[in-house]
Length: 438
Image (cartoon, rainbow, N blue to C red; front, side, top):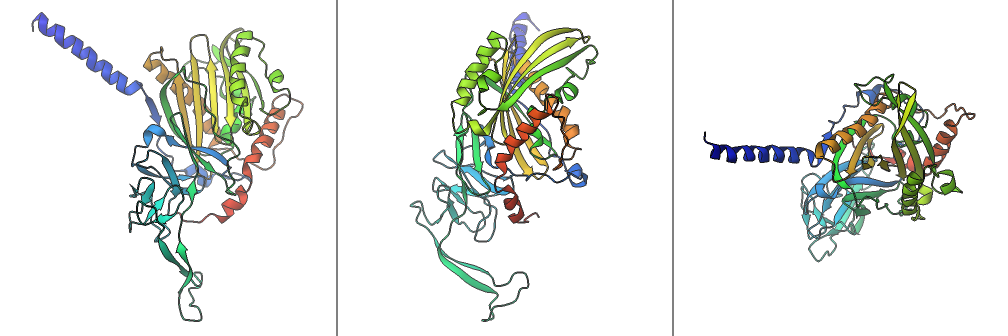
């Protein structure tokens, strides 16, 4: 092989290797297979709060839903079909067709720009109004509604009919309110069908680059995951390890934390950081998030300083974390270090009681190599996994003992009081849920 051939082949090999590297790490995904919920069925959980709180929930990333694409999801006790119409808008409706009960999200197709067509008999429903329509003019279909006279005993009525007419006229299915913000699609779910108390917050991360996402499943009550941020003391035990390969006697994390609802009096003064650089950084974030007055009562804030302890003697400041929990299932974390800045977006999807799907989305400085951002994403996931063995096997009881003389449990109690606001009507909603579990 002459030198000219080598001059061509070697660069081509490097280009091919970089392309493979780029494809793998440019947007790095770590996805766990769904668990079979063996623990959930065997573990006695105790008397818990309701499983499906009210608020905005992540539906999907914008890039995951193409024009004309239809998907189905089980979320917070609801079966939902969602799709992007040919008008580029995302719509979400109750999944089951009122005609014969087919799932619109499985085999359904987009029709008339904003409608979804049932795969069973072609009935079309408008994603804006929920009306069953006949054509692209969205003129409503007039139908007759029948029900069984007595479905429990299957007895006929006085006329000898098992099916009797209930009403005639327009028919519609439930629609859900959708917001699409900066590459993420959110859905509003409320057990009493109340209107949104607040709007989803636009994150402050334009200077950072989206690099990856992890997806995993945990078996616990939905409150366990967000409550983790207010549980000050557990950091010293669960999150002390820096790495699986480095023993804690050599080096470990030492944490200092503050947490409180955003609408508390003197919030800025109580959460003020002693270091000017960090104080100014956090104040910019506080000003951004607390400007949403409707959100403030529904937002909890945490500030977490992480230091590296060598041989339990020498301390080096390593990380400064500022977190905003908005509603029951969205957490946004800003991590500042001397080398880089990280923005994590955590989102919970309650698949079922004691079965949560957890998303961790990473934004980071664009100058960092892709392999490093993949490693940092893995590190964030590792912190979640550290809690999973506890969550999967613990109870969530209605009675808990607290040490009110310490500094940790009062914060935890205050957080639980704050989070309870999201359960309005949730218990009654769960009791009325249909048992369509095939």
